[in-house]
Image (cartoon, rainbow, N blue to C red; front, side, top):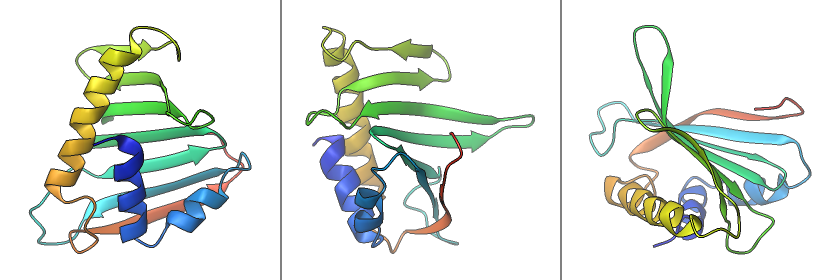
Length: 141
């Protein structure tokens, strides 16, 4: 399963696919999906943000002093195969990827595993979550 398909399924489930597709003009479009009260399918919010051809996906947890993103991934949507631009993981740090480089295979393996986890945990089912934040504007993420 690829992230493009999973993201399409998530946005369709929440009725936001057309809004997402319309946000290709460079303005920042973002949503945050949190589990519904009492839902047990997943616990970490999912952030989906688009700024022109750049897609950012992230999970986060709130720690004592900060918000910890893990993972935080950027994709280049201007290419049909959505190459990974960068991945940030809390314990391994920030990695940049050449869109045509051999390390894309490593990045894609991680993304495939994450996409499968999103499906397994129910992020594609709107009965488990709620969109709590939606933004659209000129601000940079």
